[in-house]
Image (cartoon, rainbow over all chains, first blue to last red; front, top):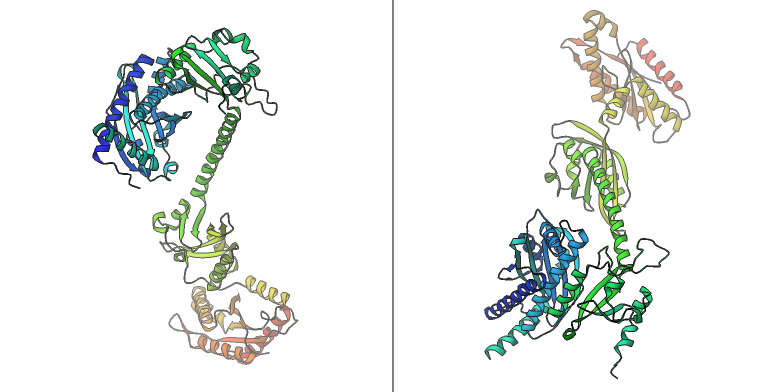
Length: 204
Length: 426
């Protein structure tokens, strides 16, 4: 099973992700009245045992984090993960619930809502670009320290993982979060086929 | 055959399903909801949900509806939230942890052109209860772990513990063990346990230890060791085999307790302070035990009593200090002249006793004759010559200690009266 991407495939995936992230930014503006920016996505293929370190390296080790994981299935399946610090989550909760000191339940629900918009838009738009459909599963929410976001034991059974990551930034509201789209082994193969098909359609 | 009756289909589901628009007007309310909320569909359809459930945060609900309609994918409420979307009583009697049904609420786009969404409510109470139970158990486990960790710390700092693999490779040692033995943990881990074997401890003990643990049994005994700074230490040691879940030998764990002081005290109790030989009390105790138990191998012995000739004149001529030096020198000569297994003690004053084990009377006589010659030939303090008289007798089965001592005393008396510096057998 060749899980490496060639340059064309990477370029195409980056382009689809740019479109998806643009759509997510628009959704947020439309649905939450929040005008944020999202960084150009970073695409990495790594071994599964490197995932925990890579995620740990991209977040601040001193914070506690709300971590929302949502699975999606279809021809292209995987897991979307949104990681937001406790401080940013409180600011988000206060903003969405129009409160000064939101309750834990309100913060959790606000984080879930933002994740919903982000992941749904990004994945829906990406899969739309790839002419396929996905089904979303109920997201799970955890409150963890930076070293526990991904457990090495949990991912050990996979060989390769694609990490598509970006940073969401609402500077004016002091909300910042990291989004990761993770997919593995067979799903990577399917993704490559879908990308190739799309490249073929576009460039003939 | 295609089913064209969605109402019936949704009524048959064991979940709550309602259809609302972005103004929360209910256009569908399934049977599950009617039963669980006690609100019949005829009462609620066409009306706003707000009339029935004013406590719902409608700003948030509206946003979720808008998201679902706009993106075309489901949106969710936090399933762990303590807030319930709509309160539904839970009638479970056997547990009281959840009074209201824990709900997983999903808002899915239904008829987008009419801004209608399907709100689905799933009962996840059982799952949530299990989560709560796990959380509760985890809290208990964490508390136990903390206690265990504290206990482990106490053990580590205060008890000598060493763990080895089943093949004797050191896997772990307690801090106290390292401090005590003046060794670094990193130097010990990976070494074979045999590095602690000292040359002057009986091989029998080691053989017994190894055989016992190889038979997967625990071993309890005393071991001796010399620390890096040369101190001799004694340990009461318990070696336990540890088995894995399949009953296979996994590792050994040894707990050691320093008994050096106890050993020294015990030694002091049975030692003559001047000559460092055993004292009379120890000899008495030993011989009494032997004759009491009457074990064939133990009672095969010859008893010798030694008396230094004219010892009083050494004291009178050279003083008591030289007299003491003479006793020390004679004790040394005696010790060097007999076998390691024989028992030698100071009997009192200038008298010594020797128990020669597993010898014939003839052999004993030869040994003692050599002892006599060795004393005769020794020079004390560069110029003092001494001789000694010896009484010798063999233990007769069934007699008590008094009887053999009487006989050996008689032999000694005879040796004294017949010119001294001789061995008399009786």
